[in-house]
Every structure is written in structure tokens, then in C-alpha cells.
Amino acid sequence: MSTINYFPSVAEGWDRLHAGPLGCHVDDYADWLAHQGYARDTGRRKLRLVGQFSHWMGDRQLDHSAVDETQLERFRHSRSRLGKDTATVSLDGRQLLTWLRDTARLAPVQLQPPHDDPVTDTMQRYERFLINERGASPNTILAYLSTVRAFLGDCFDAGSEDIGSLDSSDVNRFIRQSCRTQCPATTRVHLAACAALRDICIDLGLSLRILPTE
Image 1 (tube, rainbow, N blue to C red):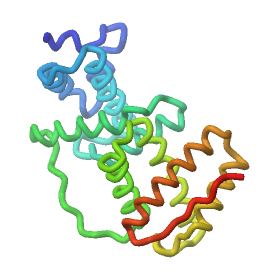
Image 2 (cartoon, rainbow, N blue to C red; image 1 turned 180 degrees about the vertical axis):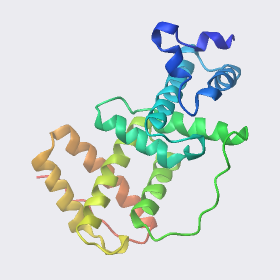
Image 3 (tube, one colour; image 1 turned 90 degrees about the vertical axis):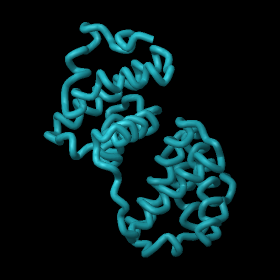
Image 4 (cartoon, helix red, strand yellow; image 1 turned 45 degrees about the vertical axis):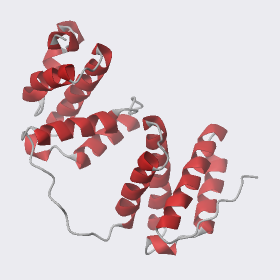
């Protein structure tokens, strides 16, 4: 497959695709995607992400060395706040980061010492649980992560000292608040996400019981 078929036309933003700290890698990444056998539409989607992420970093005067999962999540959150589609940002972005590291264009991830951030720890384990145990789709993973991030953030903002201090009352309070402020479809997502959270909390040594909505 010719890699040129992966690129949008000039009218669609050729210069923008090559702007920012990741612009110099776009051609090689397109070549790699082509050799991996990705369809043209999928390849273009992945390349558009490179351009958008690179442009976002350039706007914030971040250089190539700052590219990592933290910046990717900030980029995804920024797009989400603007109402833009974020369904594949995390998955496509992580594939990009893996390729950059595998080709020595980005420093390998350094093992970090254990930290005491219960939200980060739980979110990482929860995401692995959704992928490995539930086989959840990218859209489901993103929706559930957003819900649980909001739940944990709300709990720890309220003064809970650690993840072990949470119980069913915290979950029920979060769901009842969702019933009052969110549409029924969003509340159903929150219920499903918290039910999945209950399973990972069992693995963490907790016991969370989800009460049905009234």
C-alpha cells in the first residue's frame, strides 16, 4: 500500500499535520501504519490524531521531550471540554507513544517508585480490569473511566483519606446525585460503571454494594 494514500489533501490540512513537535515523525509513522496493513480511513484517523496532538502541544510551547501519557490525557480532556470526539484518542495515542519509544524517538518509560495517589492507582487498575477482564469497547472504557474519575475525585475532594475509607454510601450518594442532575441515559452509564468498579474494589479488598435506583 502506498503511504501517500494515508495523507489528507493540502486542502484538508497538510501543513497542520506536519506542525508542532511531532510533525517530523508523521511521514515515518504513516509508512509504519501502511506496512501494518491499516485501511486508509483508519490510517488517516490515526494521522489526524498525531497532527491534532502535536498542534495542541505546540500551542502550549511543549517540546518533543514532553510527549507522554500525561500530556495525552490532558489533550483528550481538552477536546472533551470543547465537545469534540475523544472516542479513540487514548487508544490511538498510546499506539503512537509505543511506536515513538520502540523506534527510539522518545525516551522509554522510567519505572516510577510507588506513590500514594489512590485515585491514580485505582484508575490504572480499573482500566486494566475493563480491558482484560471485561473486554470492554474503547467507547465503554472511556465512558466508565470518566464516571469513576468523577466519583473518586468527588470522594477525595470531600475529605476521604484513602480508597479503603469508601463504602456503599459513597457510591449511592454519587448515583443519587446523578439521578438529580443527569439525564437517565447518563445515569445508566454511571450505574454500570460503578457496578464494574465494585468488582475491582473487591480485588482491592473493599466491599461496595450498589443499590438500585428508585
